Image (cartoon, rainbow, N blue to C red; front, side, top):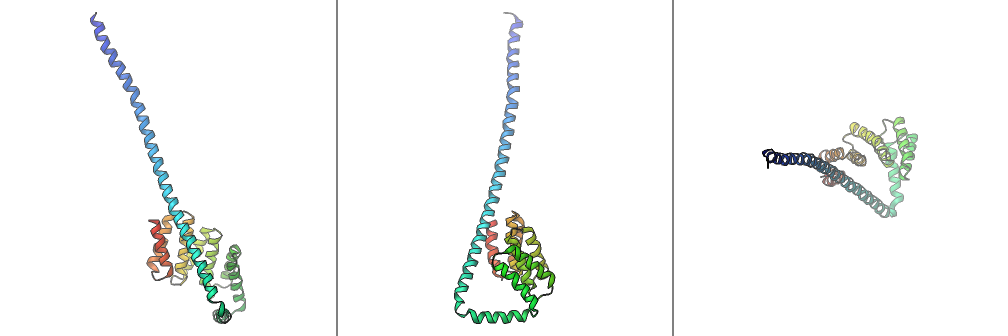
Length: 225
């Protein structure tokens, strides 16, 4: 056996090992890249699922709150059935003391009737017309609130937020302000802007701690955490 053959055999072995190593390295790198992409996609899916779960919990809270309000309204109707006639007379006198202009009163009642009957698109238009005609009305805070609520009911969430923010900016101490913020928060949830909804709810708790809306806002904040 020649010396050249002895040296050539280890050389072939080293060359084969080098080739195998050269092939295996890109394979491992490719597998690592695939694993990283899979982990990133999994994290994104988990984040999306968490956001969807938060949205679903808040939507359920909205539905429960609406049901509670409807039940409270039904109870109120039953309780007041016996003395509704006299109460209506007192309410009419109180309203007349607030709105002395018959045309203004008629415009207000027309828009409110649309709202009570669930004709929210028409109600929003009616309240908007009222604001243009009677910007200094004693009922302007209620009108602005119901205008925003009507827009929310028709799923015009951005418009609802804009109108209700006008109410809060012009009348921050109004009894309607915390309720307006609650509708704003619900609109932000519908738009999947959970961060803004959380800030709005926190503002209710901070600025209007004694309002009925504060308790609801606090419970919904817990759902967002």
